[in-house]
Image (cartoon, rainbow, N blue to C red; front, side, top):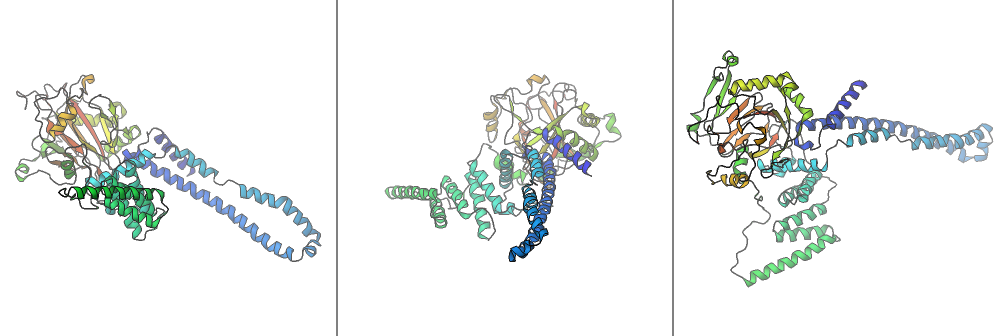
Length: 555
């Protein structure tokens, strides 16, 4: 048993030593932390047992000495008149008490501390904690969850109970504050107050919460409430130096505001309701559309369009491999044509690919549109690895299957990419194809303006490959997801939900070779579950006779 545990621990260290922190970006890698914590708990329990045994010995010695000294102190001369008592007193003080001193000074924690020190180098970092906190806030915004719902752990599809206590909520609010995110600071600090007011015990005090909350609402422009909260803070802690300074400053600003109002009576008062704040506008123009699709809202699958969607058996242009066992094909969208295939990968194949990919997982990157350099980004939270056919026969088998289904050549395709999403893992709206040279005739209306602004100067990301642009995407779902995690197309109003063993396929380029900008898509944040996918990007070269060019630019 001990040998098995030792081998398990060594294997765990081997995995973690190849991981570049950023645990929050992959649930698959976070599972290793479960085993690390379990090992630490076992080590701690062993330390407690040693300490308890040590204290038991000390307690027994103390009781023995208490009884003996009570007797000897009552009649010292009479007690020492017996030569054996005299000898034993000398022996105890010369030998036994120093031995007790050695026992007391024994460092029983050495083993536990050594284990903790070794494992600590593989622990999550401040970046991980901040990333995990941001993930909860992202889920909060995307799925319109209030802090109270999250703190109670009332999420759809969960099978384990998980709650955030007041100290946890304070940590969330402080993380937001440290990032200058005062909107979420207010929401989470208000939740802390709510739980403290309900009588929950915590190490966090109301004074600490009010200190953060008062300044956050001030930053959001709510001067009146900032003043009210600061006064409340001073009523709890009159000696709070910063609060005193803030109070004077806020009163000064409020007086100036009143003077301006009096001097300009026509000036309208702000209509914003006190204590209610709007989420700040960010860099993503289609944020509202994207997030509504993630919630399953705003899907434009009208009855008329639905009549054009069918199910059929697909034999891949009469590929010999599929004539006997064709795949079940289902239309997910009509234009652009997006299809789903069923039973593409078996459970055994999925588990084997995950097993191969897991040690290679690294933070997923994006290509900087201006420099062409690969870099990590907050809008892509996952880890990925690239598998070659030499890695395992199952990789070659899956590659050839995708070739048979699509009728496209895998010779110029990219390696099989495997991705595992982290806490609130996502990939915000993006294109799979390179937008260079830029289509100057593209309509710059609606969210297409963002396309023009962001990618007008983008470098050709695939020029060095010599295989042309990414003509098509084949996306395998390798897990079910209890909640969230949909693949959505904001321009289309389409949402496709993960189903283990299925795959979706679409063309990124029109037959003319021009990019199909309608295929801008996103991976919604995973609300509950562990999302695994793999994908194959087919390139233009080698497909000339398999998917011939059209006669016009829009074919």
